[in-house]
Length: 226
Image (cartoon, rainbow, N blue to C red):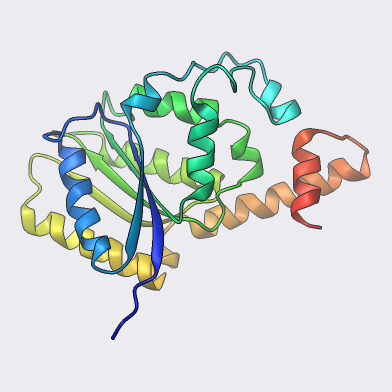
């Protein structure tokens, strides 16, 4: 008998929550297949969170201190804790004018300093992108880059447009799950780029240490390598 392990599955739904929306339909199908392989503790970040986080104002406080001036004024700390506690992160978004949803962009803006510390390094990620006709390549490339800077390993990309058949969708889900389990997709994902960024930061912060340029980010990096 195969003993299934327990995984914490986090879904960041950049769409406005609606069971009939394409991204939610794909996610629910994906979740059913994941549940065949793992026991799931499911976590959501949706409109109930994303509609109520403040926009980044570019003050750079987070880069200097590791804290945002809005940390205690909205739900961003809850979101960060959910991200840090997850094993598998699914990010889904519809495409608006060849870009991700505004809610999802606001979240990434508020996580700006994480793009320098990469606290999600090693966690697995599956992307779900839906559109009627255009923008899949642009949004896929953008999200691959975002995930790389966060340290996420993209093991699956599931896309849907007006031409996507049910068979194609099921095949993309199956491929994503196989790679989630085996990790054999590394040559095709963002892992090499993410490792390149990690090594680049490692060199940068070592140079800062030599020059005694102490910042939150440097302190974090030094602690990481203790």
